[in-house]
Length: 567
Image (cartoon, helix red, strand yellow):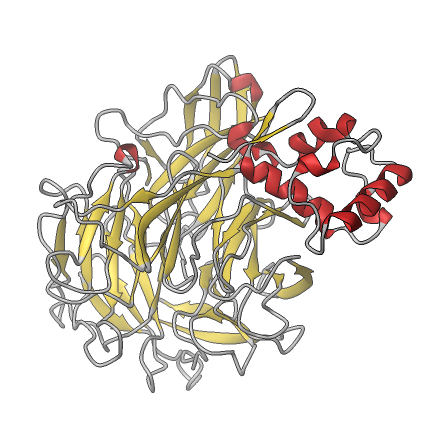
């Protein structure tokens, strides 16, 4: 490994930290940029000496920190520079892991990934056949993957997916690289059946489990009451449908009586970015896959019956398109439903969208757009965003190649740079939060998995959950035991991700109210009001986060490895 040593004490500086220090010193164009309040104590005379020295070393600036040794008082701030640019503030990407097929071949690549309720990751590849889907176990990160007990008879590439109330993954549509071969049925994956999980096709009801229309690049949204909304993915058909668990079949979404055409919507992109709001409305954030959005109008859908409702447009603050961006829901305690939600929208293909984010607030059916926030980094097209247990948002990948990673801090409404991902992860890349509170990233063009350790994993010992129930009821309470209970600042449920093409309607971090007594945390579950829009019935990761911002590992039953089931 390349090493950089301090000339006075021969202290090794980690290469990535060394690069960040040089980047900071070489980027500055004025004294003010070097003397900013970063805790470095760089005075104007030292800043002037640094800039003057830089002018003598070449057109590209400093190439090694050793070139600064000898500047008066510079050696006194080296330790502060190292502390500012180390993993505590930037996090750390680990060395890539080869994604091996069971036979040891390392040529598998997948644009779909879902975290199953046993903590393993299901990948869906670009083709059908024997390697169409496979399972990777983060606990055996460098080991080979395994194949499910069977494979779907359809090509599920370019499908949409979300979780059913029993933890199975429902997959709708697909067909491969172009429209025309969409599956006629939905597919369900049960990780607890057989040896390595079993695929079954939908087969019930009057239509024998056939979808109403074949869909290529659809979005699915899990609703309450055992239903899944299926949207878009079919040119020329703007009608939605609903999968019903009880019948294992599909129903059209129709117009309410006397309101013709209000239930249909022509989305300018495939994979529209959709999230379920606390009141049960479905919010469209203008994101999705496709070319630049010619119609930047967001909207929300409200149900006016079990299978009927209307779309209501939301005026946008500007005309920039958010296609090829990504949106995530941000929940906070409070409001008439117990929680309030806003949607953070990151990047996109519009000229003004590529380097910015914006927030859509959704209170009481009167959504409003908030200010735009410059990302302070290169363009973000086909970007991935993942909610972390502490409620912050990690962003990685996207064009152009080599874009730095970013972290959005909700408490400060600010973006900050993270450790750079060495390999480009843009179109067809996936990012998933793991039970370890690490982040997994995979790119279609690279047969590897990259693991990111967020900054919170470098801020001290992790709290431990030593006991928790297997089942939690809506509106009920549960007791969690932890030796660090007195240090816990927050308790959250995290919905496992099911992501493809920068689209994921599943992920959400749900903060919970709790009280502390000794080593016991008594936690109140999301309320019992139907349709359970805050937290649909299903499996969730449970994390506790201490007063240093450090999360536990997600709780899993020691015998079954299952997450907590919210009933």
